[in-house]
Image 1 (cartoon, rainbow, N blue to C red):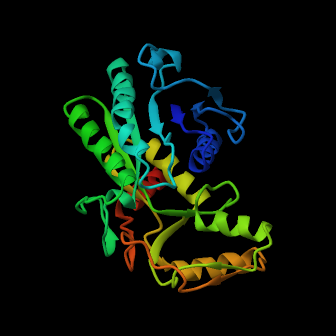
Image 2 (cartoon, helix red, strand yellow):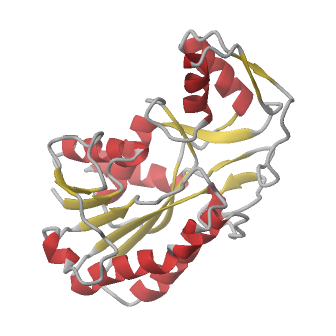
Image 3 (cartoon, helix red, strand yellow):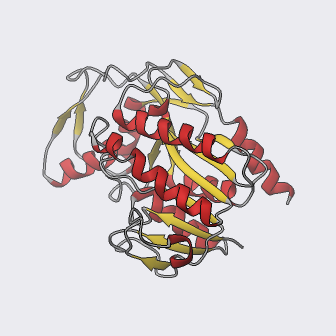
Length: 281
């Protein structure tokens, strides 16, 4: 059992990861500005993680692991907040490491890479095209330099696209479809639906996160993914059918974003290695 500090624990992925960790027997210190979606078994704290005057490591119970989900403006990929927050996030994590934290997990996404066609491995060159991607990739690089030579396990989880419990998701196409259905809209403008991405169900993603936390043998960048490309139009059509929705997409009304590849997905080799390690244990 580990004591895990989860920042952004009230978010879509953070709340599911918190529940998965608790179900797995871990102790969770959950930090966020509110707790409406945080499992009540967690030790909830509303605390400013960027307050440099606080002795956060001891204030938060000397956690074994940090998983740092906290991030404002996630759906707005070119919000300047992402760049402005790099220093604050680095100093927050640095302070915990200096105080004795031994396992650090940060979060990235396919936006760390920028435009890419095909499978993204942990060694794929990074060329982020959005402030969001730049901020996540820069924080990772800073921490890799700082942690080098220290007795600290550093893991950077790269996420792709997530679905499931979609009313809780912020900014995903699936949550937007549900909202438009509630508003009584019959149709919505969409791209041609041909772009292929890597989709993973939220509970499976939470399980992968827990398995990463439970081991320190596999470190560095780790793709949390399905490893399979699926056309977004197929995902949308299946989602509408599964939820018995009346709304329908108007395909071809919007162009794809310039940083969206025709087909991009995660190489799942490392996460499979972690799953196999868990099965052996």
